[in-house]
Image 1: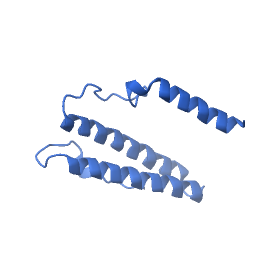
Image 2: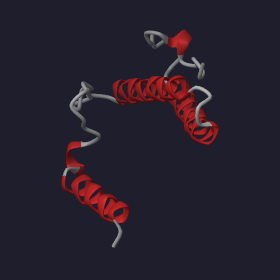
Image 3: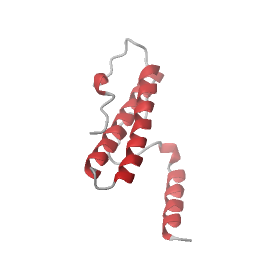
Length: 108
């Protein structure tokens, strides 16, 4: 088995071992004890926005040095924006979301 396939297998095994903890990384500060659907959606929206910012940063870092990789990341970025829009549309209209006007920042 090549090294890449071996690494993917290890990542999947670790993810399965910790599945009950949810999407957890050291920097993830979301409330895992969300009491209602609205707060869960808001937490998911926060996570999507974090991903969007990460992908935008990657696109900026790549610049014009690797057009193929940049295109792949931009495509992923667009999907994350769609996820954020879907989540935002699930929220009642009267729910305030900080930074709502900036949910579509777009890659630079």
